[in-house]
Length: 153
Image 1: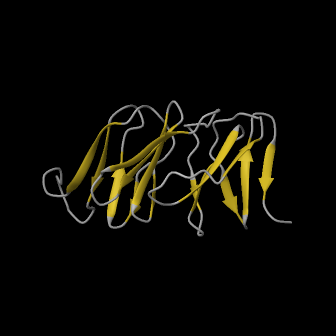
Image 2 (image 1 turned 180 degrees about the vertical axis):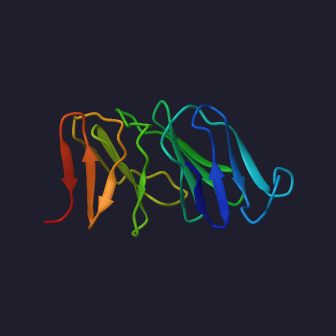
């Protein structure tokens, strides 16, 4: 799934191809005039990339989170989210600039920015590759056995 932010569209195959940032204002074959940057091959991971502020975030197997500068494609960090993060479930970006890599197994919460900082790790011990959903201030997570709702009472 492509991501849009800061006037650029970022996309990749999810199967080991390059990541590409393109200015979407062109028409026709924009490979020469509108491609802003490319990354080397991104290892397999079926979750969607996320653009937040000045950064592109991409989670891939084996649980590696990469952060690129949106304007240039420069890699800002590459860190392992150890302990069972699911690289198939797509992340959530909240209005308070938090990234949630949430699933029925372990979930990770990070702030948006150039520094890797784990705010929290939670474990439901109910693995599933389903992406979480958000509605009415709650996060819904489908585990392998149960459906979870996380939010304020």
